[in-house]
Image (cartoon, rainbow over all chains, first blue to last red; front, side, top):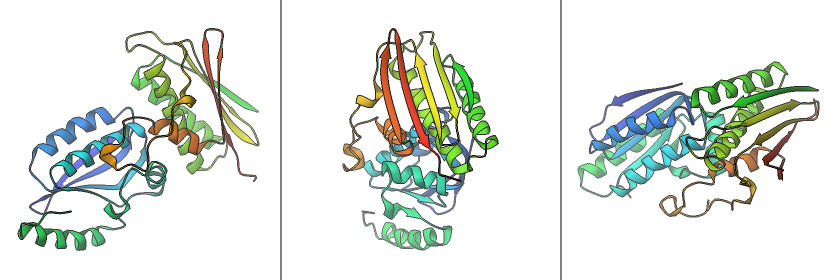
Amino acid sequence: MLKVQLQEGRSFTTTLALEGRLDTDTAADFDEQLDKVLESPMKVLVFDLAKLEYISSAGLRSILRAQKSMKARGGKTLLVNVQPPVQKVLDIVKSVDLRSIFASVKELDAYLDVMQRKVGEGDSLD
Amino acid sequence: MFSQRFHIRGASAELIEVLDRIEALLLEKNLSPDVAGEMRLVAEEALTNVLRHAYESDEETALELTMGIEAAEVRFVLRDGGRAFNPLEAGAPALDLPLEERPEGGLGIHLIRTLTDEQHYAREGEENVLVLIKRREPL
């Protein structure tokens, strides 16, 4: 079971809050939801994983797809509130740039404030 | 020693039921939630790997997973009647390459290798046999 909640706050940012398991059972539906989200022209995609208890390679592939797609448009994919079992899997496959993982929403917000200024000034996010 | 055998025909819902049962049994037998979750992951990766490589998508599968729980270890034995396929021959994924340059795949078997202590493959007659062993921390 996976629940996905879409949150839009900042103008250029979309947050997806995931709850449950991202695995061989749920990844295909999640990919469809992601494709719809990726149609919008946002620059920063945030996965809030506070309630994601489990991820398998099927789920990792979904996250990697999103990362590639965002990178191709000069945007970023960020992770926040990663729980220990999921963090362990991310560490094993080294699938996520450690600079894109934030321990808390507060840390993430501070980072996004800086990004927002950059976008406002027309700078690239890299 | 505790042993439980599961038969999987390949349907996703059925696979998840087996994974739920494996995790529940490990917790029942006093393994930590961390280890139970990791062995659920090992089982998911091993089973989906066999379903993907040893069978055509519409082929009926004869896949069996036996879980043994002993004082010293947890052991999975997977037997399937699909075409010969040794998942352990797959090379390590290119974890040092940037994301966009990495070839797809290989993540599942990498997770299995990292989360278990021993992995053995044998072709026995018409069957693939994969043995995965996780040693338990002494109590």
